[in-house]
Image (cartoon, rainbow over all chains, first blue to last red; front, side, top):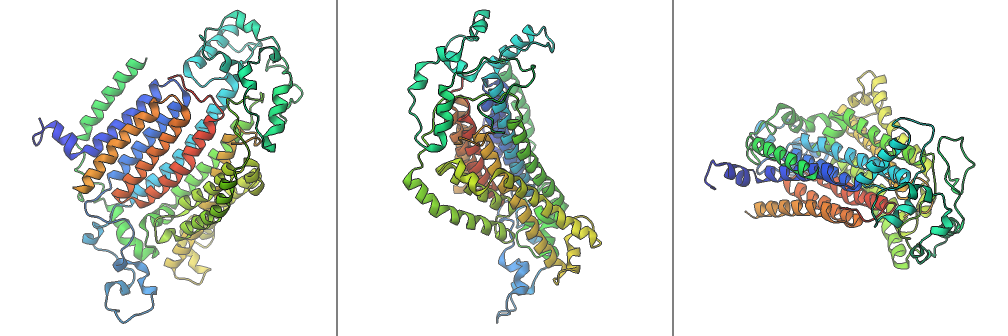
Length: 248
Length: 249
Length: 82
């Protein structure tokens, strides 16, 4: 099975690196499709991106070549060095066009340049995608895909499938952490149950958390926990008075 | 759904593995990518054209300077977009975190960071300036500098870091970086060359055209460093506080 | 021979770490393991001769990408469902 010229030999022995890159690409792709959590999907996207960058950089590798920085004997700055007694060496001659045999002793710099750009753009994209995740969490209270789809379907059902004037109440994240262990079926009883003021359904484990001792956190946290929350209104109504976090 | 995804991914994988048999052998110096005319030209002529020993920096900032400028713009836009997404939501209800981070800055951590951060920043500036001769350049130096501010934010609190680098100043510095980059390009255009053709800067500065390209590359990398520093810190500040800049990580 | 062994070892570790980062349920652990993935990539590129790319990945992957992921996860629920 492992003789010369067979598929396994070609793939797994000669081109093992490329095979592993394909495996990494598949891992990233599968994570983007099949994972439920949005953050896991983003990690899959990052794995995919870095696997592609890995592949790209490795097609410029040359056997026995050195890094793409000029060696001292080809250093273009050598003409600026003070003239020493060994001026007959190659380095003192200054910048010169390299001939082909010397060119192949340096690694190809072009894939490196392109992938530098790709890495930085990749981290910018990751930051942007994470901010969208935060926004989704703020709006829907969850970052799990199946719960999100349920909520969207339920909202569509309530508004008759289009943009109605009534928008259902958004669930707060607090509510979800309380119920995250139970089944996620939303019934009308739960919907009407959301009209109760918050102070009557605060679970106790939240209050048992250690209070922060630093002063930069004290005010906002204690204010938020002790004030009774107003009943949530629809978003289509005219803008309400600014609430406690007027940090705009 | 998961099973379908798995089968689909496996099929794609088989297809890719089948195509991987056609790749050139690992490290072949005569593969089409390694023996192409463009990269051979870069390797051979970087010394005479720009006198910069680091070929990657020369290609990044001089031969392909247009790409780098727009990459900087992309980073800037990403920073802006993060803020507009996080701050522009209509319903800014308070969000109760699952766990509360103990905010007392630790004695050992703060004193160690107090000693380390100046060293990090000087090293970041060194990496930026020495990018012509050693691995480095604008991006690496800029990210290291931004990471030093993130370190301040992690060991004290975000308020301390924001007192040193407010968010408005972040965006001003980021925009300044792009202005520097485009400004050098426009200067070359006003002196008679094309956009980002640095050799024409030798008409105003008393250096040879090759050294003009050398120094203009440094200026351009400084611009890139500004933008990347500011945006990396702004990214962290926005994401760790959900856009509110208050009780950060 | 030593270099090939190094290459094979790092590549197999890379696959293991990628799978692990997507398998654990705790998102902070996932982000930290993703930092390990970044670091292994950096080693691989340094061995291949791509020193600039390795430097960038070291700063960006470990310095910014991991920290930003963890900072975001602290604002969300820490436990993923799958």
